[in-house]
Length: 225
Image 1 (cartoon, rainbow, N blue to C red):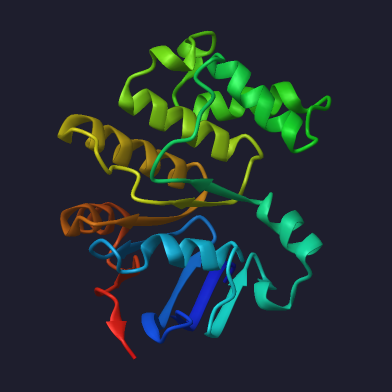
Image 2 (image 1 turned 90 degrees about the horizontal axis):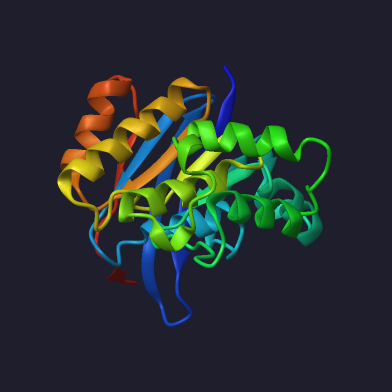
């Protein structure tokens, strides 16, 4: 059984003793989904940062695409992170550029503006449902379309695993549903997903669509050690 991500007994405490994450464990199968639910300040974004090794954990273990992130050098972490897509809660796009221009800039920044660049861009556009918006300036995109562009930027390196930080946050109900539908399409296309959310009904919907075996992790408000 292939596993994209395994988080085991993960713990994180701040320098002044605030325990934010404690004994967090879950796994994501290849082409699987996991959902992390919690209120503000419960550590959802922090959890994703720990997975990406932007911060060291206080305890526990993270196996990302088969690698123990705590044992990797900074250079190897950088290489591994190129294989993981990240959709931030607040989309970061270049509004002065077109949709295509944003994707091209991302590939150039990563040193991937090679003979495969057009194929990467075409696949990212298809997966993010932006094929017909390729020449539109990012400044003209709606909130949902901007979120889709951020998704395309996360997918342009063709990652097998995508981390989504509250992807429906601040979207109106119809747009939020469209975003969930799009993420489920990505999962069916073979991309493993970790999705964080503040909304329990979002987690329930995803689990209903992906199966009762879908892990749902509940985080609580941070507590003092």
